Amino acid sequence: MYIEGGSDMNDDMVAKGVVCAVAVLLGGINSAPLVDTTPPVTTLSFDPEVPDGYNNWYVSNVTVTLNATDDSSGVNVTYYRINETEWELYVSPFLLNRSNYYTIEYYSIDIAGNVEDVQSASCKVDVVPPVTTYHIDHFVGYHVCSFWATDDMSGVYATFFSIDGGAWQAYGSPFYISSDGTHIISFYSVDKAGNKEDTQQITIPPDPYQDTLPPTISLSVEKIVLNKLKFIASAYDVGSGMDRVEFYVDSQLLGNVTGPGPVYEWNWTSSDANGHTVQAIAYDQAGNSAASNNVTGYYSYNYNHHQLRFTQFFLKFMERLFQLFLLLKLGGKK
Image (cartoon, rainbow, N blue to C red; front, side, top):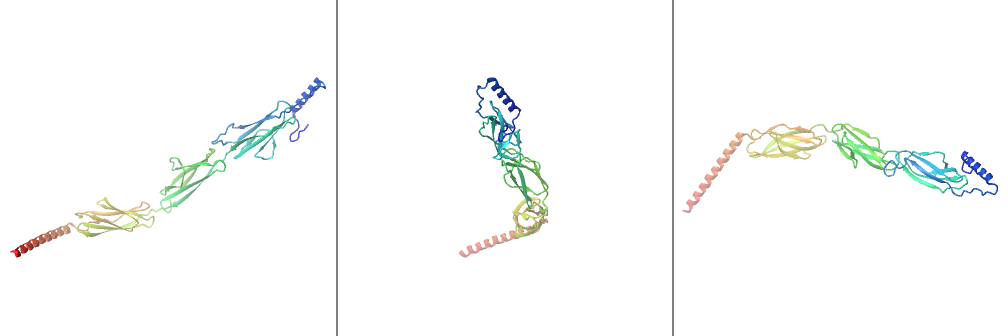
């Protein structure tokens, strides 16, 4: 016997048919025929039984098992289909081993020809981790690192990175890293199902265009007034550009002038500049530095001494002149 859409009857079906025949013979010709109007019942189970990832996602292969029962004539066949494809005869458990949203429809037919209503069950499977790419922009003195992560199924949850073996950080936007020396950046991404990408590494060598040359600087001095000097530094840098010039008197930092230069002026007032040594140090944007020549105070002790004597003489002279003026004026009134 053959039922459409099914297969030849198995031993169980034959045995049930024999039982029915014997029952008819034993009961006589007038015995009531056996009647089966109830369709079979089919259940579906997943293995793993519940999703093993986050957000109701399976992150491993899923085994689907169908089990049909019929209390009267017995189950003849069970059919199933996945995502509205062609119906297939169920023979044994089958595997869902690709990332996808799955809807499984199924039903059974018993020996009496009763057809079960179509049942369905759904699950979602993501067995592929995300993929992260990176991009490095090189600038003088630093690099800018960017990451992009993609996941075609559940979507990207987050990307994490570590610099030179340091603590892991969640990536949010491009970040800066200095170009002085070699750096190792480790990174990976995780999708919303919980799949973790294998950790990747980038080795960033020192910037071949990094400014390692110091600026050039020269220092001169001009006298402004008796006790005030102007120190003039001329500083240049052909790499990253100038940042600042610091002025030191006897190795003590007393002045700081910032800007691109090339001329940096600093005024110093002192009651006695004799024997003091002034030096300027230039810094470029990359942090390289260079020291100028040493410059000693412009006027000497002798110069100060003679100037002081002249000033004292002049003041005395003016005082005498004023006294004479007063005497003449008083004498004229008499």
